[in-house]
Length: 518
Ligand SMILES: Nc1ncnc2c1ncn2[C@@H]1O[C@H](COP(=O)(O)OP(=O)(O)OP(=O)(O)O)[C@@H](O)[C@H]1O
Image (cartoon, rainbow, N blue to C red):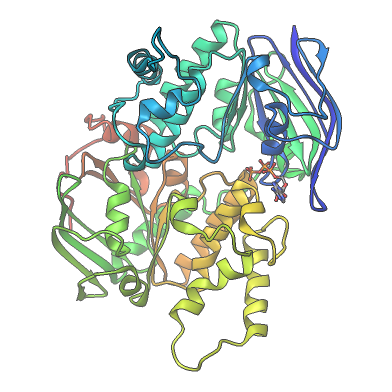
């Protein structure tokens, strides 16, 4: 039974066409994937059907009845809930207050029933396997935990239709597995789910059907009841180009490169680095031109390690040397001057000036680090920005667009792009392709491989194991603030990464390297 049907939906923002012919249907108790390149209109569509935006045209039917789209649709009346890509949590409130916000119940004498609200919040977190205190303030929790709280908040609305807009972008594989268990349980209860993601393996794993948007238009549909769960069928529909995306380096090439790295000079040496309760005696080296992966479950100290190297956090003890020169990194400018830059994981918090243009954001690192004559030549900067926009395939390719008006994935492209202009010696990447579409992702990794070939050393923390396997010469696995395994060349495999991430000795796991190796 079809419970939601959208026909020919249209929406523009100040002349930017976000949707021009979106068609979509959702059946009772199914999980329908919605995929498409960055800026193809998925969030705009999700916001229209959840009543947050009024479309310019088209029709919407919910439970077979037409919905008046001229006024704001009241999502809760239609038992429809959405998990937003840009989180809607209040940082200064606790987890339980956020989860139950706006739906407070009062007792006989007008007191808010806090005990009941806490119970509801705790139950929602338990459903997702999240072990956080409901009394913790949201400001103190990590991006992946915020995402899970946002999902928990939607679960408590007991909706019949649940829209999940990139719910897994900041989650690690174990958190994704737990979320999938919850989604499947909801499906069994008859809930219909729209699942938006750029990770194609997630779509083929969890969805019953899939709809593809391109440039604001529905361009295809696959029903996994009759069609194969095959990435090769999906990717051409998203990119609009025949054929699949090339891995940036073949397996053989990667193994050869890893061997070459053994002879290369050291770019970075980290010895016995510690941070109260978060990092313990971390030691490792990074070679010139090497791509070193950092893996493990979310929150095992990976972010903290990168934040120390980039000068955002102060280590408790240990040593850092760049090209053999010992360094005391006291602030971010210090790290940047030494050629070490961080592309952060939380783009809205750490990476962008949302209410400034693409041009300002892309030129900021260069302008702020500029010494010497008073001005940088504007024309030259403009040319550089045009080139960067092309490199990161920004859509729309407009340097004067305000960042907050770009789609989520395009904002992330700007975060990565702005540091590339400095041609860093060491590039620290914290989940750089979070929310980025498949086409751009392969483009970004090609760019990273190109930088590595020119001698930039890269530390890549990725929550997606596939990305580590496809792009790294060597991978360090972290568990509870320690390096517990180092995997290189031919030894790199998903099984080994998972076993080490859970700190289980896998069949090929020859040695536990707690404390790291130098
Ligand atoms: N408030 C706004 N003002 C101007 N343009 C907007 C606004 N919101 C969205 N857009 C534009 O509409 C288009 C579609 O954006 P939307 O966020 O729906 O894409 P998306 O498919 O969800 O992308 P992503 O995968 O990157 O999240 C983009 O070109 C975007 O820049």
